[in-house]
Image (cartoon, rainbow, N blue to C red; front, side):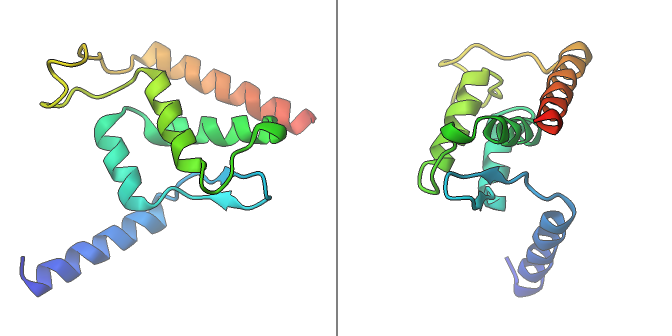
Length: 126
């Protein structure tokens, strides 16, 4: 690539990061883990609804402070969570390994939103 194009793509990446913040996962020590943008994009190529799942993980950690993860264990927690959801995208490498997954339906999306809303309400009540 040429230098002008590289600079433009870097600016686009910075703009995406500013407009699409990643939900931060609360950690045991009181700090938060923000999934790096490039890893978020890579996971987005492998799994459906990564941002929605990151928000669910954040809420789970808020509701379960004794089971929060450490800085070094946060990425493993995220990848394990996504693997358990079973919402893996079909890639050319995985065609023969895993069964193709159907895109999430509107009904499933609404049910997920309902679960997230219930968790938020539980957190507000304490």
